[in-house]
Image (cartoon, rainbow over all chains, first blue to last red; front, side):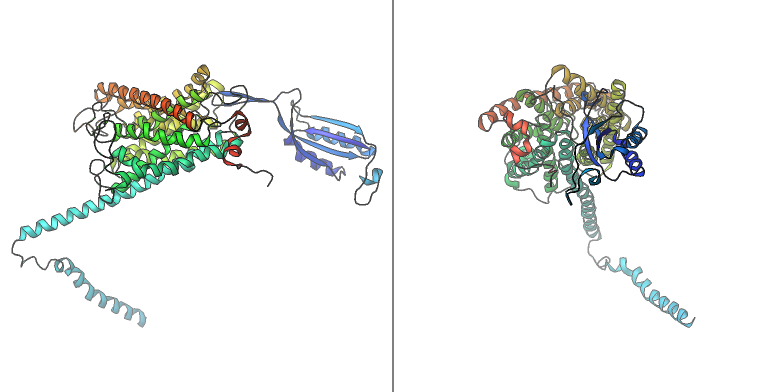
Length: 112
Length: 475
């Protein structure tokens, strides 16, 4: 099992979600987050005063995947989340030891 | 068919009876005519009656407009100014700044009814009125011919009250996000008596030293409150901002407006309300009101354009906040001029004021480093000053022959002396507001304190001053 965290542009979220559903992803957790990478935000001007807004709104997707789906999902996100501009975000993968379904205490990949 | 014929016959029958009756009506109403001993006396009586009715009709028309105007001016404070300022502060201070405007609607109204109106418009003193109308004694349905011969004095009183309400509320823009509520109430009460009331009397009151039409020594043109409302509040705002010092974290920490949507709605309400403020200052529903209405609208539009253009050139973008700030600056600047200038000069005044106030709030404020949080001085003090000056240049007798028929009014009429009179009025209002405010600040600071503690300031005034939050996001 792998945990996938993807930080993406809010504007790409709907397309990514639809594409993931098409490849058979049944669950995900979504959070509205703020952050920045190398692109360092933008400036806003109010009555001549400049403010640097360095934390920009992003969407974070989290899902735990059976090993056989990981590549498909990564490919799908890469394809649909990409705008080609700076600020498109990142994908992180990490190994997951165990998954337990609270309702019936199923364990392992069958709990996903 | 039969029924239709019957109907026609009935209708004709009714007409046959009614027409002679109608035709007789005027004759029937003067049966005394031929039998009266003195026909000319009868005619005079009728003429007098007619005069009365014409006066009543004019009074009804004027009164309808003036009551509407009074309501419009109140709308400028709440919701207009409350929303405009409310959106410009950070979220934690939203209710506090709105409450400071709203409190004026309560506080000043009470003071005005008790003695304020009388001190501003009673008697004919040089610097202040008297107590002849204290507790609104003698203020009823009869007009006060010194000020407005066609509307009940009650209407005049309540209309002027609305100006007294919004003026101190404007100051709260400079002291936003750090002024104690108790300090606000005390300061505004004192300010009302020490600065507003005397200045209103001197400029608008009978015998006032700056009054243009009722025997002032230095006739200063101020149609709707450039000196009394905007210079006085703007300059006092600057003094308050300097006295209080900067907000914690200013200018390093970002303090962007929390909702420009609120400010946007507020500014638009101000624009609409300003028709009552300026066109209402004609105190009648005649041609002068129309002239002031048009000048007001053109001034606001041109200033929105002027500010936006200056911003676009400087920043590469025309912002929404810039456009609405420009409109308000234009409304301020056209206020003293509204009832004296023709439409094209009104456009010019607006354009100049928009660009000028843009420079004041973006460049001048940054150079001097004072924290006029919401630009009460940059917009009202600066806009009011430039407007009062330009009034002396563009005022024309053809719009408002205030000095008598055929006499020139402003520099456009060749009367350059008026620019000097305007300067005297401006300097006087500046000095008066400056000195008065410093004294009041000292007193307030001793009695209640003026500024909240640093801890309270960081936590926000909504919770620390009023015990509530504007946005309870968890509920």
